[in-house]
Image (cartoon, rainbow over all chains, first blue to last red; front, top):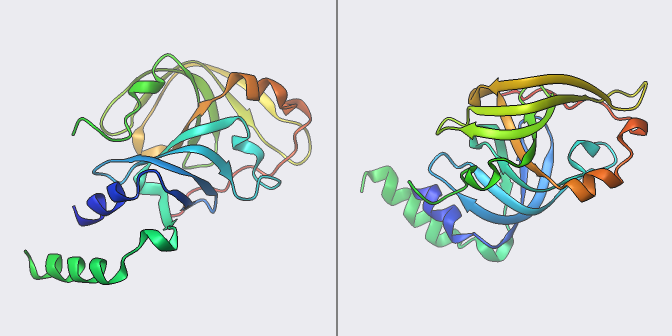
Length: 93
Length: 98
């Protein structure tokens, strides 16, 4: 639940989602759900020359199961806070 | 969970689905469920290759199992009509490796 809450805080920010098929998509985070499915707006594929497959897509839903990385804006990460929260969750409360 | 990135807003719209094996299927979203299983009407596949432009394969009514779906994109019709797919050459997308 921790990362679900965390991603909800990032709604409205610009992120890059790297998929397990090596595609990287940049866009504004619109929403996230419990499976960490992600909806992005104003999307563009990072290497459009190589991957023109989504040229006419501006909004997309990405299934959580195919996400490899989410690149976050530096100002969107409070490392200390996240550290504390993950430790607390690991301890079971 | 009521909020979140559901596909409600895309029902009856043309969408572009990228599957885990790298295929690109375009069709009208008719239904979906929790597991992202989807029903696509009037669907066709866009086959990318480096030898020739994009080929369109007519598929018709399709159900795609959620497990096999990577991306569901909202197809912008205006934008799509500006793209010259018949002359677009590109490598097919790689399959998803979990």
